[in-house]
Length: 201
Image 1 (cartoon, rainbow, N blue to C red):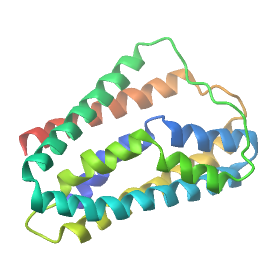
Image 2 (image 1 turned 90 degrees about the vertical axis):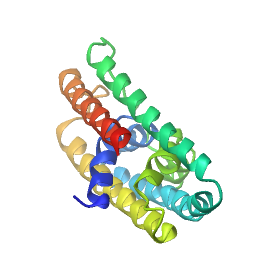
Image 3 (image 1 turned 45 degrees about the vertical axis):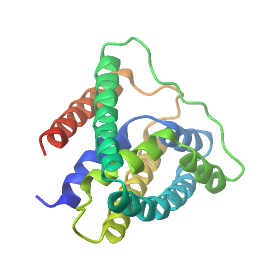
């Protein structure tokens, strides 16, 4: 299986994991409509595009100049994946449910841009997970950009689909608890598998 396909499978459960990006988009959908959620998605993808440029250039420099630091980043990514996996699996047995505020932003594109730009989860994906799929013997800049565009493209597809889906099936502030636990449990298991694969490779 290609490295790009493995990267896509690794970040897919991360994209589905509830965080600032997803909660903001769903709040726009519930506060207004699916179009607002899609506009917010465009803003979020734009924010991650900024991360892409800096990471593609920065990671290339780190690989060439600081191999020890690069290895530390690799293990940070594995630890982060394991932490998320444990958190998601723990949430399956939690009685807490996720609540989303119905609030439409005046400029969802701009708000989405800064939401992604300042999102800690997004930063960790770029700085701790993405570098692990870069071949140090090849062109690191081009590889970093390709992986970044794969991530951004997946975010766009998933969040636009969620915007349409949630605009049609719900107007409630609370997502169905049983379905959310299934999503959390599946995502947690997939992240644990991804972390295990990265440890042995």
